[in-house]
Image (cartoon, rainbow, N blue to C red; front, top):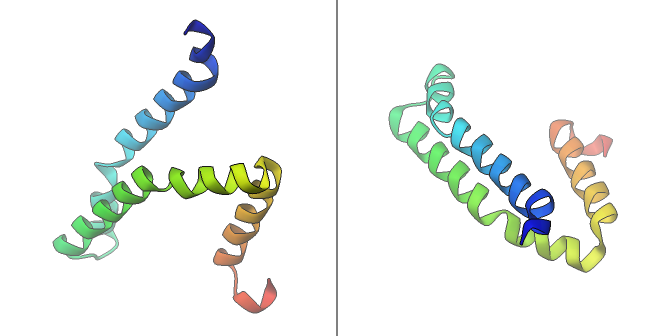
Length: 88
C-alpha cells in the first residue's frame, strides 16, 4: 500500500486539490466575462462533469494506443483548437 502513495495517491490528491480550488473561481470568472448567472452555473456544471467523466475516455485512449501517442494526439488537438482549422 505504501508503494502506491507516490505513483497513485499523491497525483490524485494534487489533481483533486487543484480542481477543488478552481470550482469557486469558475463562476466568478464567467460573471466577469459577461455571462448571466444561469450561464455561469451551466459552465460550472460542465466543468465539474468533464473533470469527473473526462479521465474515462482518456484512460481508454492511453491503454489502446499508448501514453506517448495519446500525448501527441491530444497536444495536436489542443493546438489546433487554439488556431484556425486550415492551419492544422
